[in-house]
Image (cartoon, rainbow, N blue to C red; front, side, top):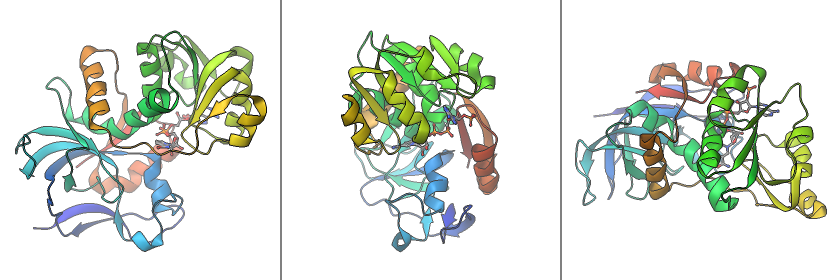
Length: 306
Ligand SMILES: NC(=O)c1ccc[n+]([C@@H]2O[C@H](COP(=O)([O-])OP(=O)(O)OC[C@H]3O[C@@H](n4cnc5c(N)ncnc54)[C@H](OP(=O)(O)O)[C@@H]3O)[C@@H](O)[C@H]2O)c1
């Protein structure tokens, strides 16, 4: 039996996506998940445009997507059985935007009963990026002052809530329409990135979480106190950081981490974190989903219902 998948056969700008039938995945020591929700992330269109370095031409054709939620159909892993509800951030050797996907033990986490499949599918990649950026790379500690750029976006809206949960003072940048939304997530000070200069408001910071790069990142270094750290989800300017006596982290990519993902799901259950889903699309409307995510300024996440 074949499976349906979102495929990229050649890199184009903008991206060209094909929803087609492909061979089913072999379980190969993992589980096969019947996918119910896969999320849409900027890495999807960067990959499809040939702008994501780890996926070069030699890897085409590929299935897109890095995170999902669904139900285990078959299992070769002890302790995991058919009908278990799971979510996962999977390696880039596979794609999550398909009806069936192989998942390994290190990648998946059980979905707690109160958490919907939509929320669990929207969460993994964005949550691991925010979590690893703030805590693993940035070493964020209780009581610190942090600035989060792009705070209404998929990664940013979770980063604001993680920093708030950690007991930090949170400054956040967002578009004018999103200021109330970001304040409702727990940011202490929300700054309109178009009409205000964030560096006039956010000063003496321990950590900047940069999801924008470019000019926003360049201006952000001045907001850090001596020895403070800028963690970017894009390319950090290490030379500038060194010249200014602040720290940064070399280019990194979020990694699957089933334990940390479980911790985040617990926070969702406890009510400390909520996941905003801007819009749901059917799998075969994936091109519309990309256009919406890229052009229509969604809040939080966009998901595909498979
Ligand atoms: N290194 C990694 O492992 C990793 C992992 C995940 C994501 N990323 C990268 O991180 C970036 C963010 O990802 P995402 O999923 O959060 O994207 P997203 O959902 O598209 O969110 C981006 C947010 O940034 C806002 N924004 C645009 N220009 C801004 C500015 N000048 N100042 C402040 N905010 C601004 C957007 O607001 P508007 O509504 O105004 O457009 C939007 O809310 C992407 O480039 C992605 O590729 C890297």
